[in-house]
Image: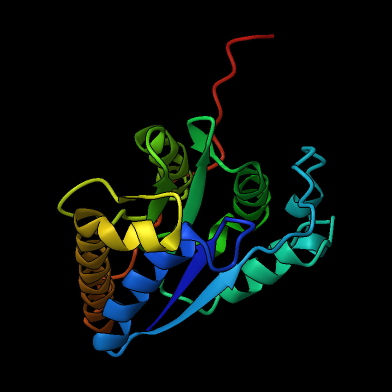
Amino acid sequence: MKVLLINGSPRKNGCTNRALEEVAKILGENSVEYEIFHVGYAPIRDCVGCFQCATKLKNNTCVFDDDVVNRLIAKAQECDGFVFGTPVYYAHPSGRILSLLDRVFYAGGRVFRHKPAFAIASARRAGTTASLDVLNKYFTIAQMPIASSSYWTMVHGNSPQQVEEDLEGLQTMRNAARNLVWLMKCIDIGKRNGIDAPKNESGVRTNFIR
């Protein structure tokens, strides 16, 4: 089993990464392979709704090949679970992770379906629960089980050193990681015993506004 941890902060070794490292520690202790994927500093353009990703020629890829989006989708195909981390800006997730996830889930949502995940928010003080709510909506519309924890999955601090002092936050990361491992193992056992993911309906859209 493998978990992809996405660092949605421009700072590779900042507070968000420190939280992801705490998750990674538990994954390693449970013999789960993992990779921390840093989205980097380069600009990430937003989705323009061109629908090119819906064509057969662009299956599971975005027509705007700025490396990060399609590289993440390709990695996601080989993974069994995910952790998405974001810093909090003005009480919401970073703009770069929102642009990234808009395109990743629009173009490659199928590779995430029925795979468990959870989100992490890192803040100096406030805005964490609002940010988690935004990220969790990507998971629920992609039919992904969400691994919960003993508290909301957030850490507080203005530096990685201050995050070290947030003992409850780090504990929450560890408990969420253990629940993620448990969910992946349950899903794996189910598959090996003939219990496959449901074949849900699709294609019906209700539009009241004409």
